[in-house]
Image (cartoon, rainbow, N blue to C red; front, top):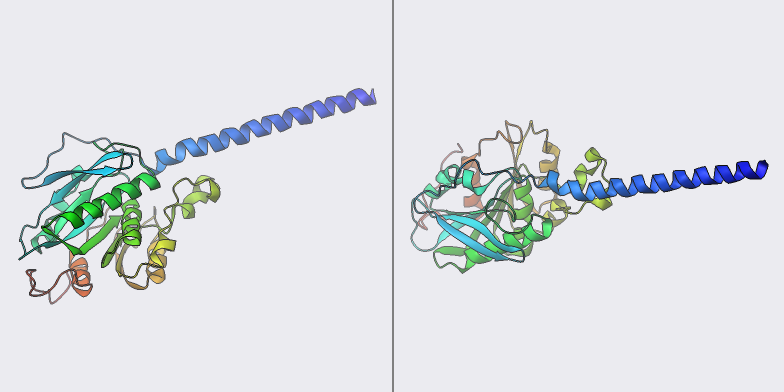
Length: 287
């Protein structure tokens, strides 16, 4: 009888161990399958795309296929090649929705290149840190190759997830200025909120590590009521940068009005806008 009981216990323990192993495997499979769906929701276009007059459609060659970008030329054209902003949007946006938001810097004489993420909108591939890196660098390289863009006055600018794309450009290409709006320190900093081990994060986007070695000027913009990416992320990024300005906005994560006056002053200070160089004269106060 004792032997039978021992066999039974052994069988039960073996069954429990197998069940536990199956559950662990199922958990990690779900983590691997679902985390990119959460990080990259890929919104559906609201309507057929409409590019404003004069906006050029650009197809960027990347490791995952062609990625779309739109180039918005300056409204007030400077003398000679124009400085430009390379802009990367948040994870729930598309370039289709953004052109009107950039009328202000275009009036200063800046061009704007709106870059799509792989797998978003009409772009090929699937989003990941690797594919977004490929697209971001391709956007910068395209801009540098255009004779009508000043290759020495390119600004990497990103909002939320786009801040990680802008940071990737700044870390691997020479840019005089970087603007991070509502950006996070890294994806791993959110892992505990979703009961995901840090080591299981596929796309860490470690902005904090990259910003420490960036030699250019940094403007960090962050909403004081941001509950999705708390303001502490922006403050930590600003502290880690070599040359940074931290500007707090009276908003949350998706309702911020872009403080163009602050951005403009920053671009003058970083040498992207140059008084007397075809740009509008420097403002006397921030808006």
